[in-house]
Each structure stands twice: as C-alpha cells, then as structure tokens.
Length: 437
Image (tube, rainbow, N blue to C red; front, side, top):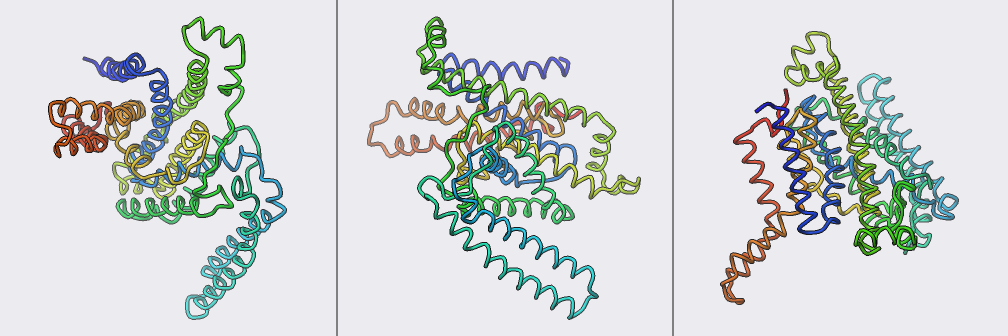
C-alpha cells in the first residue's frame, strides 16, 4: 500500500467516525467535534512548526492560546463607558513607565562599567521606577474596576469586527513569544520547557487577577460573532424563509439554526486551516524549511555552515506561537466568552502535544490527522466508558461497592485512553501515523 493511499484511508477513517457520531448521536455533536478539531489542527500546526521543524520543546502552548483569546476581548468588544477617562489612560501611562524602567535598567547595565556603581545605579532605577509605576497604576486600576463591576469593571475593547481579532491574536502571541524567546531560547531543551511552562502560567495568572484587563475570573460574555458569515440563532428562527427550509428538511427551527451557525463557523475555520496548512507546506519545502530541519538535526554542523541558530530558533518560535494565538482567538469566538480559568495545561498543552506525536512530528498533514483523531476520542471516550461500565456492572446489585467504584472511574477513561493511544502509537509507529518524509 502506497503512502498516499494509507494516508487517505486514515483521514477517511476519522471522517467516518465523525459521520457515525452524527447518525447515532446528533449532528450538533458531530459539527462541534469538527469545529474544535479544526481549531486543534491549527494549534497542532503551530506546535509542529516549533518541534517538528526546529526541535523546540515549547510546553507553554496554553499561554499563547490565552493571549489569542484576550485579543478578541481587546479588539472586538465595545469599550466600557467612562473607563478610559476614569483610569484607562493612567493604566497605559503606567505600563509605559514600567517599560521605560526596564529599558533604563538595561541601558545602565550596558553603558556603565561593571562594578559597584553599575549595581547601585540599576537597583536605584528599578526601585524608583517601581514606586512611580505603582503610584500611577494602582489608582487608575481601582477607578476602572469600580465602573459597574457586576457587568463591566474593565476597559473593554475597540469594537472592531471579530475577524480582525484573529490576526490580532496572532500578533499579540507573536509579540509575547519574541520577548520570551529573547530570554529563554538560549536555554537547553529541558530548561526551555520549564521556562515556557512557567511563563504560560504567569500569563494565565495575570488574566485571572487583572480585572481591569478582561474581568479576571468573572469572565467576559457576549463576544460578537463574525457576521455576516455566522449569524445568530434567534434571527434565523424569526426568518420565515429559513423556518420553511428547515421544515422541508424535517428539522425544527431551533435545531436547524444551531446547525447552520456551527456550520458557518466550520467553513471559516476550514478556510483559515487550509491557508495556514498551505503556508506551512510551502515553508517546509523551501530552502528555509530545509535549513530549519538541518538546524534541528545538528545545530553544531548548521552553525559551522554559517547559520545563525539562535536567530532562526527565535523566528520559528514566534511563528509557531502566532499560529497558536490565532487558534486561541478562533476558539474564544466560537465559545462566545473568555474564561481564563478554562485554560488548563491538560487541554491546551498535553492534548496538543499528543496530537502532534500521534499524527507524526514534522509532518503537517500528520498534525491535522492527529488533531481530529485525538479530539474525537477526547469527546467520545467518557460517554463510551460510562456505557461500558454500565454494561459490565449490569448484573451487580445497586449497593455494590465495586459497581460504584467502576461507575465513578468512567470519568477517568479520557486520561487512560490518551495514554494508551500514545503508548500504542509509539510502540508500533514511533514516528507517528503519518511520518515525516
């Protein structure tokens, strides 16, 4: 069997599983799997660029995904009335003062000769800058968070179309990745993993605690939709022509409108995925892609041939993080809300890495396949596990401790299955389902 036929069959199997879900469960569930599979595939391509192309072990995926979601709030939500006049400009000024303090400390470290004078100057700049920053920042934040805290308490956004927030999410994540990469990419791979994980947790902690930015754990609701591509269910249900078409298909207006909206999202997500996949494939086949794989395989040899390894690592780190930021913005748009507490390492780091490894590290199509397969299993394994436990314990009395234990254990079937799939693939296909050529 040729590689092309095998790969086509693998995609056909995953597509068949989703179709079976639609026929046996509901088409709402099937399209939801498709939508999240498309978003996960974009995340997997971003991680594959970093790991499969350059060998960078980034476990801070959730931080860049969260920044993409934050960009949607800052770009697409309406501004909070009175927030900017109350303290918004003060917050911006304080952030600029903080950045100026850091720049001044760096300049002092570079310009002054090493010794006690340099050390005292840096300490003085940092201490004075910190107190000036807090003197401006704290009252401005308090003023913004006092504005109708039950529904606002944040500065709001620019009220721009949400589709503009998707590339903005990529730019925000790319900017953060550049700052992180300038300091962390000189570390060995295991230390790089620790650094990126820690920085991702810092990003999440800031989003949870800085209410002026995106309401913290109170969440931001009512994220606008990418109209006219995706409308609102209530508008569709009040449209006589849509209701008539739904009735002709044997669907009630509520179900039909939900399916229509989710299908609209799927179309937009598919377009973004195809564009990014095409760009990743072109990059892979280009001299740049061959250079990145040469650096991945042997940094010393590549550096001896005149390649700037650190600069190229920073380049690929920024690109991969930007793609994760775009995926994060898309996911927040799909959810219709920003929930910082939902950004857990298990969902946005472990799962994406499993997708890349199972699909085939270094192969973009393998990342897409792995994303759909792993997300399908993540959604379906728990209900299947509960059904299996019900079947196993059908003959046991209701007060049986074993029955209770087995039914309670069904919730852990997801983790068990992810580990089992990973072990099986690594044992029988160590390079993934679609290996790198």
